[in-house]
Amino acid sequence: MNIRSSLKLALAGVSVACLAFIGASAPQAATAATTKKLLWSQEFNGTKRVGVDKRYFTHDLGNGFGWGNAEKEYYTASSSNIFTDGKGSLVITAKRIPEDSSILNICDDCQFTSAKIKTADKLGFMYGRLEARIKTPAGSGMWPAFWMLGASLSEGDTWPDCGEIDILEGKGSEPNRAYGTIHGPGYFGGDGSQKGYAFDNPIELNAGYHVYAIEWKANQIDFYFDSKKYYTINAAAVKPNKWVFNNEFYLIINLATGGNFEPNIDPMLQQATMSIDYIRYYTKDGQGKLYKRK
Image 1 (cartoon, helix red, strand yellow):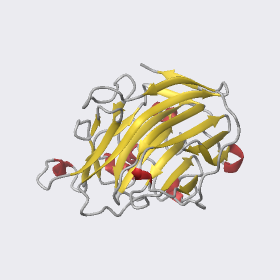
Image 2 (cartoon, one colour):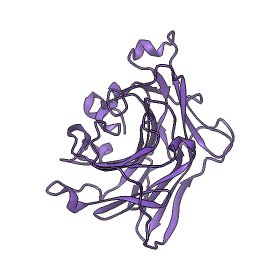
Image 3 (cartoon, rainbow, N blue to C red):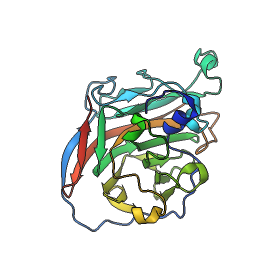
């Protein structure tokens, strides 16, 4: 998302809060055999303390009016907040802002610095399988997200008409649970009508890495956790509203703090980390298109 001005764009820049999910259960094993071909990946195998590949990613910076969700982080591109660890992962670290920091002169409501990266205007995706292997952070108030927004947002469209796909959202206060969701016109988080599902894992998600993925085709999106499909949403399920997911989307990864979705920040928490082992994009059964903008 390109931050231009106004709350409209702040809303466009974040996975929307106030989520109301129906049901939570363990994912079910996927049974259908599929064929896939790798089109693009980021493996983060570089030297320690190297940033993201600028051919594909840019940073959102600052607080963006709370990004439409009353969030409490201030995003930076600093290597103290986002870096490769030299062991094959990209690490996003949320760090509590010192009381004497000049950041508080800009955002007196902010509590942590953190990082948010996106492929907007550089790389887009339509259909296929998109996955990332992620270790989520521990600590109440942490809100990790691996998600997508419709590329039409960069062309003047507004949220939620552009569409949003939340492949992963987590809450530090719910370490066993992850959420998969879509938002669109007439079904979005602002009024609790978004379409999504939450599942519970028997082991805390922050104890290790897990693969979060979607398999996406015309009029349908399947959500996966560690190769198990746990939720399917299709165009029929949003009627009479419009299905807006048969278009190009771009990718976003961030670690938010506080906000409407995860409001209770642990006052003793000083920092937390979200680690991304890889991001991979495949065709799935012949479907999948990669858009390279620059």
